[in-house]
Length: 231
Image 1 (cartoon, rainbow, N blue to C red):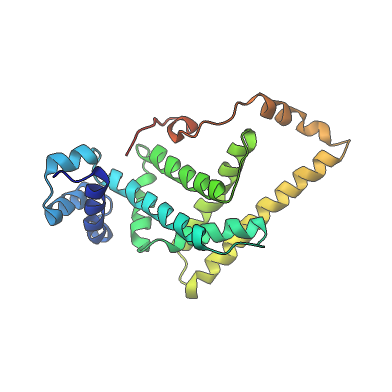
Image 2: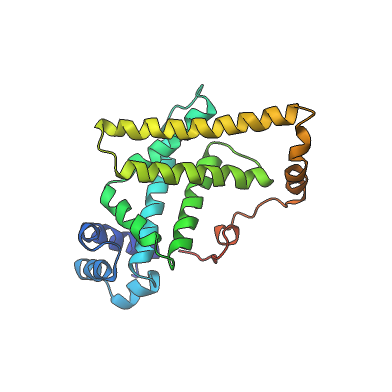
């Protein structure tokens, strides 16, 4: 009986991870995974038409899934919201079994032809964090929250890749500082709104927010230069 697509993709991914450290997310890695699994190349290409690029995205989404499972079981009751965000980002990084696979992924998605895929994957991760933590915004805040968290998350990933401190303590401190920066900016915006002399500065953005329709949850439509597709 033909195996479900996800099962085949997971087989390929598991096999590929042993080669990524040497060959990156490349065709050489994909071919090695094919050889290791003994899967029909035609079937494999039908499921992963872009080869290792699709496996790199599957690896990223596997990490997202592990993060969500940990968030479900974690006791976040009583925590400040900024601490919940920090915990989610930490859970996401701790879900990574091998830093080198992420480092090779950063290299892959820095290439112009794959940059939209990397941005889309980052956006998906941040949307999953906000959604899991109960965000229900449906105006411009839906975009700004995810855009801001994308900046925090991406900078934290880069810091984490070079961090060799015990238990990545330096990374968690870096993450806290980045979130504090965001919270200070949000506090500033709130002060502006309360000040009758400064409030007109936000009249334009507020008017725009009222005109924006609730966002569509199709990530391919959310990001410019990308098209939606199913995996």
